[in-house]
Image (cartoon, rainbow, N blue to C red; front, top):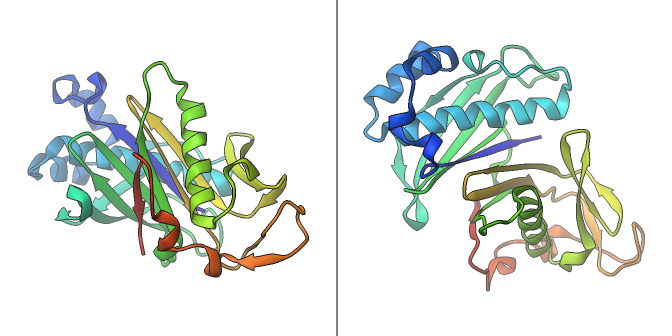
Length: 247
């Protein structure tokens, strides 16, 4: 399970002049408001907290369909920002869910990746293997359907990392939860999709213990482990999408 959320910092609704104290008091806990006010980049910090709440909600809904989005109860705590790769700023943090959604899952780990254009936050249960997580952020083309665009981004990312043809990968939906199938076979792959303004983003945990058919023989046939076909080699020749891989 995992969640992600992206915020377009150049979207009109994300600019500081649109901030309303009454709204902030309703959705951010006092400790969050203080952290935002004191941060050197308050706009990015504000939306990192908001995106963390959205990401936590998406994660929780994968397990508990009755989970209610109550922003003020989803309190994010971030460490100081540090310089990351590719000119990004990164923050590490935690978020405690108001109740345990499944045995052992109440505390979440957060990672926020920030540029001048966007903030992208990922949420995983505490103690998760971040090395199994891949994510991508890409600009939304003018007049493009954001839902279709984010699914296309996720398909490209999965196909590249698993070393399979793009047309073998399908993003479906179970209720409002995105699902992944390869060769029409459902995979137990956690995935989260998001879009806002001019950006789309996805994140997924590509489980190393799963094996995939090398050809189109369906769920059976000759198989190879992702350990043999995934990894950094699949990232060579990436297109204009902005890939982030925690390895």
